[in-house]
Image 1 (cartoon, one colour):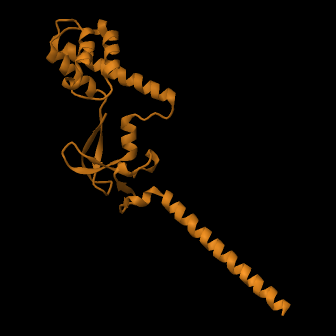
Image 2 (cartoon, one colour):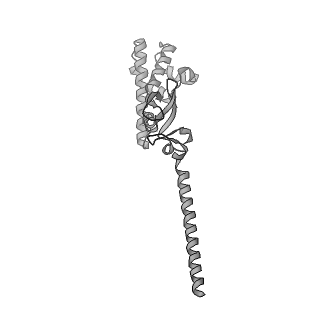
Image 3 (tube, one colour):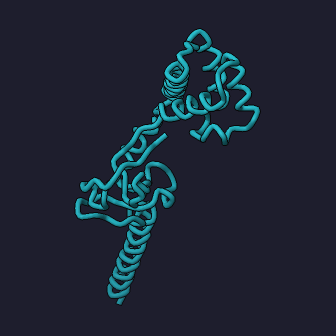
Length: 200
């Protein structure tokens, strides 16, 4: 009888252990699945995830192909790696500072070149003043008309007074364009190019 009770107790212990291991395994699988952000995206025939970056909680959880609207109006997908490369994401603070300097230099050179192309006036001697003015106001690529009057005045003060407002506005657009780059837009297959997306 004692032997039978010990066997029942062992059997019961084994059953309880199996249930506990099973529940723990179930929980681990479900927690891992909950942390697998790719499950919220569709998967194409190449095994690439595609969907909106708005569903991502961080750049690491973005789909392989991010939903974008191409310049031709078509909706498609750009590789998230292409978008990150085109936007100049920095790997560390030193690289971020260098990217900002490079961006500023491209914008300044484009602005100065545009003024010279439009007017024949070489403002390269005022380049540091122009660079400082651009650095204080170039945050996002917006039309010149969207700048505040203070921002427009800051830029105009860095220039000779005989340069017309429309020339400054055009040069501003060129400065903004200098930091733009395009990436291909694909169908959800990640192969068929359907347009381009401008970054910057």
